[in-house]
Length: 142
Image (cartoon, rainbow, N blue to C red; front, side, top):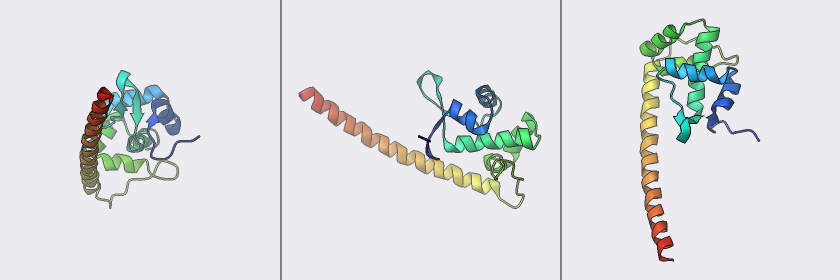
């Protein structure tokens, strides 16, 4: 059964989807501070869909566009993460960057949405913690 488009990917699934070896993804993490997959206990990596989009942009910039690692770092520093992601969008994975798009505004919107999502998750965590306390109380009585 195939995973949905919003499902998290293991490093092997992400590597297969991008067509690069797993060690390359781990290497890119050391070179690009903006690549931050979720890590579970034991260091197991899980890539969100946006992480895979970032990796696809990095792959395109390095392999198709011919940028160096320092070149990708500079592009990110000067134009933001949205520009890196935009590089990977396209039917063949090597779309040209659109100079007419305001990538900084797009990145700001993404950060704001991420903050809102964080707030919703914190609220849900508080609810779940309260529910767990109630359940623990019921279990100790019984």
